[in-house]
Amino acid sequence: MKGSSVPQDREFDLILFGATGFVGKLTAEYLLTAAPATAKIALAGRSRDKLAAVREELGPAAASWDLVVADSTDAASLAAMAERTKVVVTTVGPYLRYGLPLLGACAAAGTHYADLTGEPLFIHDAIEQFEQTAVDSGAKIVNSCGYDSIPSDLSVYEIYRASVADNTGELEDTTLVAYLKGGMSGGTIDSGRAMMEDIAADSGRAKILAHPYSLSPDRSMDPDVGRQTDQALARADSIDPSLHGWVTTFIMASHNTKVVRRSNGLLGWPYGKQFRYREVMNAGTSATAPLVAAGIAGGIVAGMTSGAVLSRVSLGRKLLDRILPKPGTGPDEKARRSGWFTMKAFARTSSGAKYQATFSGTGDPGYQATAVLLGQSGLCLAFDELPERAGILTPASAMGEALTERLRAAGMTIEVARQ
Image 1 (cartoon, rainbow, N blue to C red):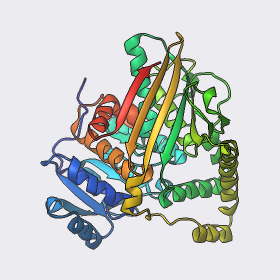
Image 2 (tube, one colour):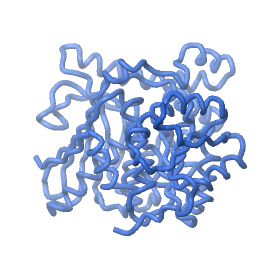
Image 3 (cartoon, rainbow, N blue to C red):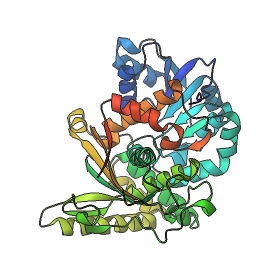
């Protein structure tokens, strides 16, 4: 494997931007234990005083970490920050509102970058505006490095690798079933609002959100497998006989599936000409599970529709401000540690072989687990040998098996079994 073209002669190995926010602090805490002792790390944000307070809370082990003042609205500060480090890890969202200037600064400086976006419109804009800049500079700009969308992306990637090793043909129907315990973060909800407001301002943007291949590097090369939808309401055993109960719409499916399809394209479409991918969520096995599943599926559609309508007017936006969780907030430590997630992906190949991938971890998916996923992504970009691929990338296409091994070492389960 070729080297990763990590920028050399930089002052820092990694800068964490947004270190004073809720997820930023969790990521800083994780890096404190996971990063090599010799790693040169800095905390970045708008307020030096708040950054200093975070560093103080982290304890003596973080005393050598530098502080970098930068603001999403100050292009000069972002450029200066990007030029000082090998990697920028950012938790500052919604990325549609605040993310493009930093991403562009990293693309121009040849600085690797990882974020937590679950916003397809943001990634679409990043591709349109900065793909060639990043390719020319050698920057790996890696979106969606949290619970959205690493478990989805790596599960399919590892099934593909297994099918190649077994010589069982190309991937065809592939379905991921999400099981989880955790809350919806204020940041995730705010990202959804940012997209709804964007669509309210330009109705043509809704087509990007709805199209399954809107993040593809070349739509003419994508599999022609007919209509694909993220709406779901079905018996679980229709996916695999080992499953019981019901499945329903998974709220992050519309984003994760686009990321997986983009990985397929960036890797050269190796998953196959009949690769069809979807994601669903477990709704339980009780007698009321069908009603729960139907309620979730209908509730997601109703919520998105009402959110889009309210986002069009000032009074509606003020109402949403009052009733929705605020960004930067989250559960206490006990609740975060009690969460968990398990993603089971089922795939059939062109030869008829069947595979199951299991990707699981402990801790609230949107907080505790995401801090591990993002932290390890940043460390992977800073220190590991990776493919010579640059541009607006996905976790699988940028880091692949290197990230898989890191996450296994960090305590997450990532397994593929032939059924």
